[in-house]
Length: 588
Image (cartoon, rainbow, N blue to C red):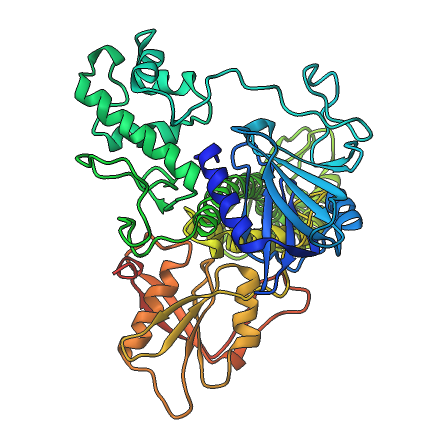
């Protein structure tokens, strides 16, 4: 993930100052353990500014409105208590070439600042710290004890200290090319590495883009550059410094991430920042705020998605393995109970032929009552015939009682397995992160498993109940809408709240999968192609998605019922019809 460097921080603060100063702080909300959002209102409107101290995605930028979930974090509560209603009057770096931004709050614009909110955007050392006028730390996102850092501990009640001073050279427009070139090439090495370690404000993304814009190889040695190549690179260097000085930034996405510099073409001779009129940035480019919010939201969501999916998959696999083992044990005991009637018939046969028993017999062969075929009965030589028969009767009763006791236990375990396999299918469809709906679907599955007591999460925060449910949406050949649930919560919503009397409900026959709903208007009839399309898609969103043909049932929603006490997504139905789905046709 590309970190926010000095250039990006300068660009975003330049935009924030132009758009959000002065502003009144109306609300503080902490999204997660790394991000707090400030609701600001100006004469032009209202928005949210995110301050993040994430180890690899620390940033400050305008973000999306937070979800409607209660905020239970202490840090945001302290910020809210001290800053609510005050005016944000300044967004300024604390010193040149430092990635520390001072957000100053006063009673009203033009008055002295009462509070300083320092946003330290420094990778894994990032932090957000609130101090009063006396420069004492009131609260911070992450406290650092003296044991954790002897260089710079951060504790409430202690004076706020700046990060250790940088020792690298300061970039300057007044520096000559000879001086600049000699500093970079003093110790021969890779071009990108020498640029990184000799000047402040450098980052890997900036250096790579700067070198490539000059048509040079970042891996090549500084000894291999000719005078023209040095000149070309120096022009890019000056261009970058002029962009910083004039606050001329043109953000856009790149294959590796994003950039806020619109580098001139390789053959450009003048190193001047492009004006709005002659900028070569594509027309689809956005503001720095939009680029940063989109990039980091997507990257963090993708990271959270992968972690959460792994957690849920691992938990499901463990629980299902235990349940299947338990089910197999119950089935074995039922198999043993199937011999109960055999023991009773042997006992009856022995009692009817007591005269054939002789002392010391270990087995006896007697003709069956109906077939008259010989039946060999094992005997205990220490017991007589009647005692052996009684032992067989006792064994029959014991096995009969076991069957009565085990059958409901097996049914309960099988019902639990069926439910978790339904959840497993919803997870299997979510193989990779594509959009925020995928992450919301995972969060809903996680919440469902917590509610069903399969997951124990002490610091759990429920999902936004007011968030719009985004079903999978498709259009059939005749133009009808087909809705498919992404998880059990959506399946229940689809079947029992969204469906009306004219729709058709689809599900794979005795195979875990999603519920599907073919939306029909009054007086319309689905064609065979529509039914086939719905069956194909239903089969695709099931456990049998890799099969050639899958039986799919469909019926009217009024014939679909939820048994009392049933788990989410589990239903029974009647008056169904069957159509064979072809999941392999669904992607096409």
